[in-house]
Image (cartoon, rainbow, N blue to C red):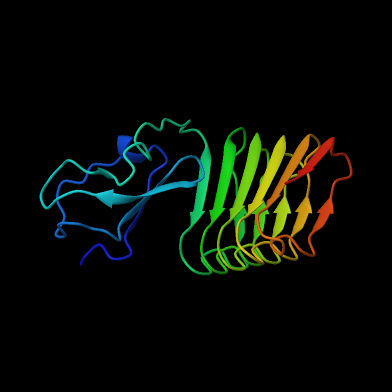
Length: 188
């Protein structure tokens, strides 16, 4: 099984990926992640030496077309951006995806002059103690989908809008948010 644990990240899904051959007849553990922050996913399906590959749910990752001028930063390894600085490009939508355990823990995520900044904390303790600098961005979305994912994070909020999505009751505990000029804060 050469595809065990294989993860393919493609913003535009199958529009940017072509599998020409693979040794596994049914790579049941190969996954594709697509969308602007890789929030859509599917199990890859296909056959040996076939160029016809698809998702187990036929529509997922099939018809995506996203603005390629967006900045997408993906931490796919455990502790990949641990205690590091992650910098967004100016005048783009910036998506920072921290999808593994400790992947952005203690990191400084600098949204800079990004139009919209989105930080996705989808791994265990993935954004714990992170500092998110978003004062110059137009908006910030901080999404925490795992227990303790963004605990103790410090957020410097933008002037327009902040959206906090805390899927778990403990995901956003003990956060500090500096929103001195922020017009709107939504906590979901």
